[in-house]
Length: 392
Ligand SMILES: Cc1cc2nc3c(=O)[nH]c(=O)nc-3n(C[C@H](O)[C@H](O)[C@H](O)COP(=O)(O)OP(=O)(O)OC[C@H]3O[C@@H](n4cnc5c(N)ncnc54)[C@H](O)[C@@H]3O)c2cc1C
Image (cartoon, rainbow, N blue to C red):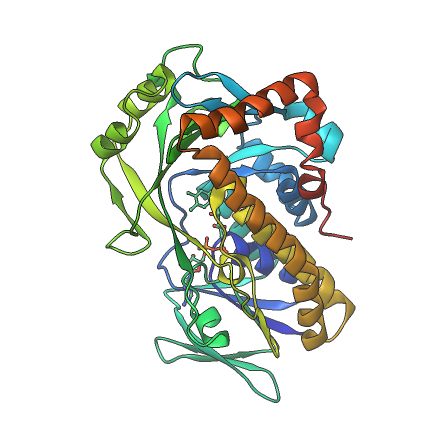
């Protein structure tokens, strides 16, 4: 039986552990944290991501606890006027062959880790990977607690601050993108009736935007509020956020935005990072996946989706060849797609944050007119992304 060590028990690591355990590998997940947890916030699971979940055998379990948006809307943050609409719901299933879901991150991670353990994967907690050494006979993994493990394959799914990426790329660091994001949830029952709709809304404004959508079948409203900043968070990647500062940043915005933020009791802030330069994802029998390989701005809601696709494609490549060849094939297949998504995410950031009235008029008005005239056009622009099937 072939063996794999997965560094990191986040969404990407657990998805890879599940895929390989189902394919008959002996899998050990090394997670630095003392328990498997995710932040208290939501995740948009687009049709390409839900197709990956189906391939991993967990789509039904995830869909059971998810919300299903009817549409995604780009609105002016102050006036609330609609700039752009994409129909989701049944239209998404018809067009892209798989549902669009909103899921609580903890629910998704629980479904993946439960399935991975049921398939035989072992999860070691409090196991922080220091480095991995590709030897003639396999890969040796050294943990911070001086434990040494061996396997035929090592998957670096250790996130944006990946120790394994630094090892493979001479200390390369992700680049601060000049933006921070507040994230959190508000109980839907605290909001006025009629304002909680099964929609993902991007409220766009100068130098900032806010994304809102329901979670847990409408019981919670998730928000992601992004603001441009010249400098990152002094505390590092993630830090507690101040709800009053958040409210001040969106003062004077549409009453629905102010009403939602008025209910925020606690929030966290993330510095947003990107990695435009080329890095190596593969060395011998070591491979990077998810944010460790390709951190991206969240403006296409695709970081976790790419990690899930990575897991399915990696499993497919490993089924076809020896480990080193399979990893090179994986990098070839994934590179072009992930780079395209990263570029689109950056472009969306620029569209959401138009600074001047003229900028907004020249980009938002034509978009609004175009979606009214050709409603299918927006959906068609997403076929390459949402229609992708990682199993073929
Ligand atoms: C504001 C925001 C909104 C987003 N919204 C969406 C969205 O709607 N849809 C979407 O698809 N994506 C979204 N993303 C992106 C998504 O969150 C990430 O791409 C995804 O979580 C990456 O998963 P991962 O498993 O690669 O990394 P992570 O989730 O970071 O997991 C890495 C794991 O590795 C562990 N670890 C780290 N170092 C070590 C080590 N040395 N040894 C052992 N364990 C280690 C960590 O503890 C963690 O458990 C968003 C991101 C942000 C910032």
